[in-house]
Image (cartoon, rainbow, N blue to C red; front, side, top):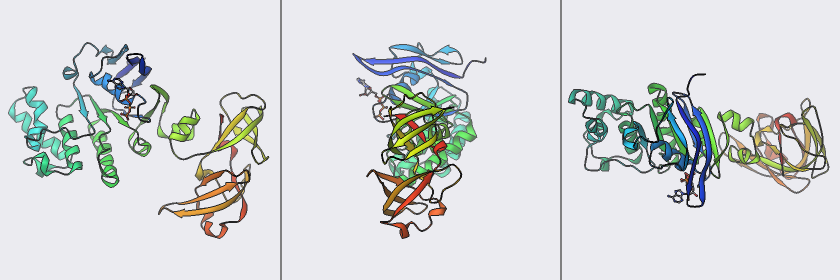
Length: 358
Ligand SMILES: Nc1ncnc2c1ncn2[C@@H]1O[C@H](COP(=O)(O)OP(=O)(O)OP(=O)(O)O)[C@@H](O)[C@H]1O
């Protein structure tokens, strides 16, 4: 097997008796866009800083092309960084900011000028070279920070919540820019965010952190369609969790009883449950249908409210057991208004639902 490009091995970081990162292991191929996603305090930044060299791990290793980085000081690791807050030098122009890492490396003037022009064009700020950071918008400042971080062609770019200080529209705009820049440069990017939409939009793979550990790592689709735990299912996308009792499992498919007494068969599972075990059945809001299909299960509900969100409509329904659930109508629910305050059946495919221990 070939060496992974960047390898994080059994990385552990303790602050006194508190362990912020527990034995995290990840192999990252060259050119990948990997996002560390997770709630505040889950260890994302600490892991990133260990790679950057700002934090010395308690144990474990960080290897770049098979060689440990731990004894290399952070400024010699050749890793680009972009942080949440604009860290531009306010007394230098945009061009001088981008030139800075090249000047530090004593590159010849001709190369510096060429590279600055190339980088400003990459982030689409060609005509801003003479401005000072104070005369730029927040989004423009982050693009300059990105240009500066990439100016000396680092093999790895680390980004710690770079867009969290920007408003939603600007964030989405710069996300698209970051994707394009990743495509055009092929740089390996490790990106920290607690925003699941941002992670899904940007990443080749997502490592979902929880309490200093990686709960699941995979593509956005893996995490969304095949969540390894209830934590993953509730962190990525919206989900409904219906209390259920496990009755039996035959050939990897479970039969369960819901709180309203209805029995559902054919629920896919990849762990074992005992008979009578309390569980929770996860059904995504968009998995519900108004009409039965082959092998769908029915759920008796009452539609109690509906809201329009432009590209989608959301319906709040109440199950016969009194639980409110989120239903995202697909086109077969074009007129959910008609059904408000009426009892009805909605349907879902048990093979697309997940069962987790309660
Ligand atoms: N220097 C430090 N001393 C003590 N505890 C620390 C230190 N740095 C981080 N921690 C703790 O380690 C845990 C993980 O922090 P970390 O910053 O890695 O989380 P995070 O997932 O990046 O969260 P956020 O999104 O809020 O930045 C937190 O509980 C934090 O309080």
